[in-house]
Image 1 (cartoon, rainbow, N blue to C red):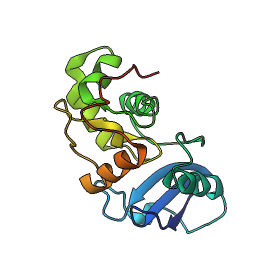
Image 2 (image 1 turned 45 degrees about the vertical axis):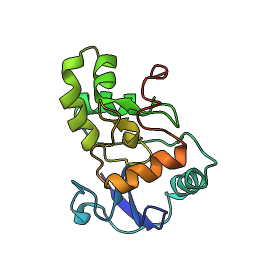
Image 3 (image 1 turned 120 degrees about the vertical axis):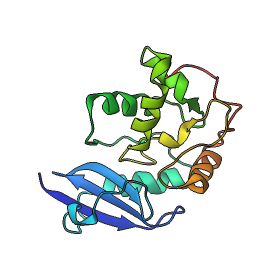
Length: 169
């Protein structure tokens, strides 16, 4: 596996994008919780990141509501299932950990869903910021709660008001 990376500025600060064999595998904040060792990011390269950079720019300008990129996040089968559910949460809406656990078939999985959410290697693109606490409050985000609030505000999501709307469709 050949890794490469690029760094870009955003309204959330500097973001590091990592690709494995040309497919986006990570997006990290400078102070990202559980950020991998930068030595694993491979050499810097601008080539191969054009689509991701363009779509991030469109998202931050409020022009894009869904990312359409090939992704290769590394994780367990359970984490992959949770991350797939995250991608189904509509722009501007939120879900609770319990709702995601129910979508997986068992409400008792809320803690495990939270752990998988916290290990999402593709912040922003795989929208783990759309997951909130059972009481509608902001809890946990690898980039910090200020960034989570910024993203929810950008999307017009009202934590505590949107969480019960619709399914994961």
